[in-house]
Length: 369
Ligand code: NAD
Ligand code: AHE
Ligand code: ZN
Ligand code: ZN
Image (cartoon, rainbow, N blue to C red; front, side, top):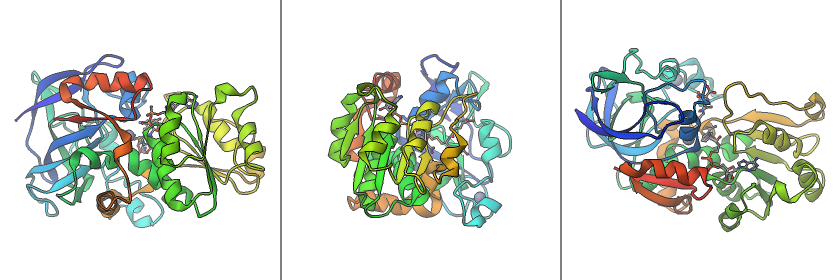
């Protein structure tokens, strides 16, 4: 079938909105009509050419919501008409990872996903007869996309797709990192580096957890007002200080925070985030994604003296079993999605969403098909 899609033909170039061909779902696969998709910094990261797994030409996008159109042979848990959120972290329920009880990082389709193809090694997308790569197993920048059954969470059909699409990545990642990865408790102190969609979701999660102090850090002071309205108790700009920002935070908090979160993808900031943690127990969670060849560093003494470095993908959330419940939370108002949506655009203007992000003017632009 034909589908309107924003295609990344080459790194560093704007997307091109064209009509592509989408092949029907094979066994175990599902054809989905995407209703809305957010644009996450990770899409921009891959488009920039910095992603070691980046492939071109590809249909990017991984923060969507839509409706099942057709199911392939053997699909039992979904049927046409079901409302779904695509999952870049699948949940097969059977692999060593799914059954470990220790991680959400299902590996059932991860290898082929990273190679831009479906589990059988082929693509369902083509343009002028040439195959296009899938992206993160989701490719939500296409009106029609094909996913493995295990990469779809079935959600309440009354949930508004143009809002709950943000649970496909950003909001779930931030809130989940607070509850599942850090396990922030009432009274804990928190520092959040980067006040974009992910950082704001960390703030929302920290408020839910009852954190006593939430320090937002960003080099763009235009982000402070929204961060404060969502629950940041303090906002600081590293550019306003001559000392390293970790020293400022350690002084503000009588020795450092209980938990910090890096929501930027900057390896220097990752160091600051670790080193602003309290001696003996402070934990720093890396959420930001850094480019090819980048490495983190600190003095090992930082770890010897009790600070902990962790990472979090999709907030540690198991998509098929836990995301539908988060959609219900959003419908009850326990997760507020409205503050994140600063802009809405049609697919034809998707490049403006990337511009707004790079200019620091948006939190999330939601693209409607
Ligand atoms: P964003 O662009 O909306 O926000 C990033 C923020 O960081 C901006 O407010 C920017 O001003 C700020 N910033 C940039 N450089 C800074 C610096 N040196 N010091 C302080 N602040 C700085 O991005 P986003 O969509 O919120 O994504 C944030 C990061 O999280 C990206 O790296 C993205 O790839 C990653 N991410 C990871 C996961 C995961 O599962 N681990 C999920 C989603 C996004
Ligand atoms: N492809 C990159 C890594 C990208 C990455 O870390 N992705 C996050 C999700 S970002 C969503 O906005 C993630 O879930 N990682 C775990 C995984 O299995 O990909 C690289 O460095 O190669
Ligand atoms: Zn994302
Ligand atoms: Zn699995």
